[in-house]
Image 1: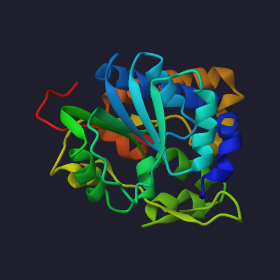
Image 2: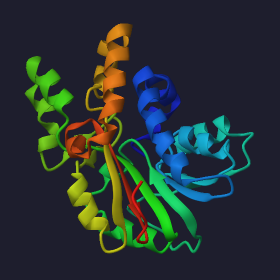
Image 3: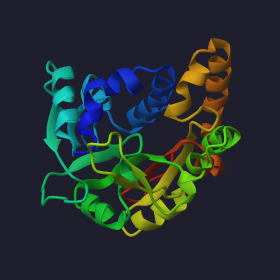
Image 4: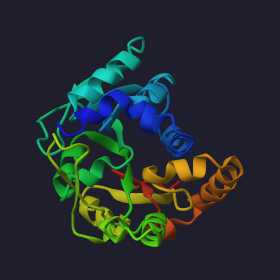
Length: 260
């Protein structure tokens, strides 16, 4: 599995970085608006289990899934003392016939970017999310201004324009297969989910903060990091800017409920 090689150092390379913690904190703030103690939640692409552990520690039952067995292995060790998490291997391209129903579903940090058509997933989730339940996703945006500007100024136009192409291959090492990555806009994702879900919220994540390959540039400048983090948090009220950030956070309801 392509993401297996990332598992041993994923937390050190990404999860523990200040910018990643900031963005994950904003996601957590959204999740606990919807999910409370006693709820049952499905997570897609759980990685090393950071989000599942956060929810479970607040009394929420989490079925945490990932296609990578190595990611799941790290997550199981990290969450060994948390009985509210069940880890299951799940490939989003081979969705199983599973009868369990959930109060909501979520996926963080680009899990849905590994798909090229989100309609089958939407239909599958519609049978598993209870009426009024929430589907929420962190998605890599189609026009990351930070990425375009930074790599463009450094003459790396291939990286600067990678989100503008129909697909971009992701290959963490030479020994793994390349995974095609796509960057749907909030509007496109909403169209694919529309038969089953209604969009209720969208916000940019990382509009003023760099993508992960630029974290080091900002994180070693504490004052600049503090300023950009504060400003980035303020962009949460500007959904029109979501396509231009590193990620956007988008929420859907399986029934007609008021947006929050």
